[in-house]
Each structure stands twice: as C-alpha cells, then as structure tokens.
Amino acid sequence: MFESPKLYNESGFKKEEEAKKFISELQDKKAIITNLKKSKQKENAPLLFNLAEIQNQCTKRFKIKPDETLEIIQNLYEKKLVTYPRTDARVLSTAVAKEISKNLKGITRGSKEEEIQGYIKKMVEEKYSTNLVKTKYVNDSKITDHYAIIPTGQGYENYNGLPELHKQVYKVIVKRFLAIFYPPAEYNKIQVTVEIENNEDKTVETFNCSGKVCVKLGFLEILKPKSTNKEQNVENDNKNEDKQTDLEILKKLKKGQEIEIKNFELKEAETSPPTRYNSGSIILAMENAGKLIEEEELREQIKGAGIGTSATRAEIIKKLEKIKYIEINTKTQIITPTQKGEIIYDIVYRSMPDMLNPKLTASWEKGLDMVAKKEINPNEFMEKLEKYINSKFDKLVVKM
Image (tube, rainbow, N blue to C red; front, top):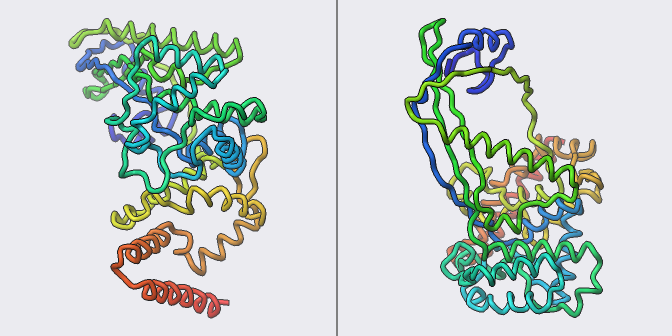
C-alpha cells in the first residue's frame, strides 16, 4: 500500500471506503515482528534566553506583547537583578562561565522563593557540577556584544517592590538558568516493525509503532510545566500511566514473534493550515528569517541577524499595530493582518516584490559586512544602495 494513489500520505487514505476495505483485508490476520529496536535517549536543558526567546516565552505564558516583556526585563536590569536584555546570544562567555558560582551564591543568599531554593538545595545535595566551560552553554564565538540573559544574583533589596508580573518573569529567567546545571532528561525508547500479509493482493503490509517514556526527569524537574488544576494533574498522571503500560507491553515483544492484531480503528482527520503567528512567535520568525533564503552564502550572511535586531523587533511590531497594518488579540496575542495591511502588501508585492524577501536584507547585510572588513569603500556601498532605491521608485512612478 506504500506510495499507493489511494493514500493521501503514508498514514491516511483519501476515501473512507478504501480505508474500510483495507481493514477488512487485514482483519484477524497474524502479524510478525520483523524488527525491534530498544534504545535510551538523553536530552539536555535548552540554551539560555536571548531577548527573542524570552519575549516568545512571555507571550505564551503571560499573554503579553514583546515590547512589554522588554520593558519588564529592562526594569529587572536596572534593578540589578538580571544581565543586559538586548542580546541575541543564548550562551555565556568563557570569562563569565568561570565566575558563575558568584551568581549561584547570590541567588542562594538572596532569593526567598521556596521553589527556587528547593532546586538549589537539590543541586548541592546531588553535587551537580557548576563547571560550564566545556558545555554547549559557553561559546565565545557566538557572542557579539552581550551574552545571554541570566540572573546576576544581586539586587534582591529591590525584589519585594516589584509588581507581581515582574517577579514571575524574573522567576522564568532564574529557572532557565538553574536548569543548565541539572542532568539531562533520560528516556527509554522502543521501535517495533510489524508485517501482515494482505491476502487480497498477496503483498506484505508494514506497520511501525514506537513508545517513549521519561525515566529520569533531570532538568525537566525545573522546566516541566506545572498545572495548578488538580483535575488536569490527575489527567496527566493517567496519561503517563497509560504510556508506561504501553511501553511495558512493547518491552515484552521479541523479534520474530507472531502476534495477533485484535482491532483496527478508523480516525477522521482534516488538514489544517499553519497556526497564526502570535506576538512572541513572530519575534522568533524575524530573528530566524534567514532560514527562508535558499542561497547558502546569503543565508549564512543573515544568520544571527534576521529582520531587525534584538533592540528593534518589538518596536517594529508595535509600529505595525499602531499604524493599523496588523491587529493583535489582547487575550491570545494572535496577530492578524488588517484590510489596510493586506492592501499595502498587495501594492508592495506588485511594485517591489523583493522588498518582501529577507534575501534583500541579507544582501544589504553582506554589503555592510564587506564595508566593516574594508573589502569595499563605504561610498561604493552607499552609491549602490541609492541606485537601487532610485530604480525602484522610478519603476513605481512609471506604473502609477
């Protein structure tokens, strides 16, 4: 059935009757396990926050706009609680990493948060290493002006006077910081391949299934979302128990074993469009705009730069909303274009389509980089830029 025209994709039929027919052909047949692979997987804590990442996180968690997040972190910075916020880096410098114990000691002495103190206490009791120098969280080559946003371990004399939301954002930064000292999360995985003979056309149908269960939380003890709703906690516990039971069943299987398939189920589904950007995810899209560029040289040029900078992206979005090109839902932070915005887009697309392509930004970034490296004269770059702009306006005037 693989690559059959009857399939929409490898796991779905185009027509319900075809799916029912397929099930009837395989019903009550024996199946053979032809491949079985067991493995362990480790997952390390994510990198530290840069401005784009914390803005995205705060939009998801607190439903606030990127400029509000920047304002809050700027306040935390001025209160000496966190490091400089307008940064694109998600790692630390070697020099900072060598002194990181000062930050940890400061948090230990200053923070009154019971949850934070619990994490630090476990770090001490379990003797987790605080030597970050040779880890992925330290990379001098990925730092331009400033390293990642981390708690300083200072400024706690200002903490009690902070608004509650500011305290919550600070806590998010502290938890991401502490997580990098925790061990990786560990998973048990199993992958099973089953073959069933299809008597209708004498072919062999192949099915794959897999199971994955977390056996050691590691850093997830800090970063795993905690529900305050008891019913939600019970539901999550039940799901985890089901996963554990399924994995125990899969673990008893052996290669070459004949098993009986008791049931097949039909499930109706529809394709759905990509989810809309919210005010946080659009920041990440702007930061990583280079991924949309096919030419490797230009893609590399915009890597780490994207559209705007860590200091200007929130203001770009704020301005687009102010001039009514976009609307941002205050509850969900979902972004939608206005009718005015769509009209402007159509005009630009028809008159100057390359203005809508990050490839243009990358080419200008390349020119600026060449000026910085003294490969071309600044005047030469400006002449080319002015010539480009004039040519576009000339075309626009002719069209109008």
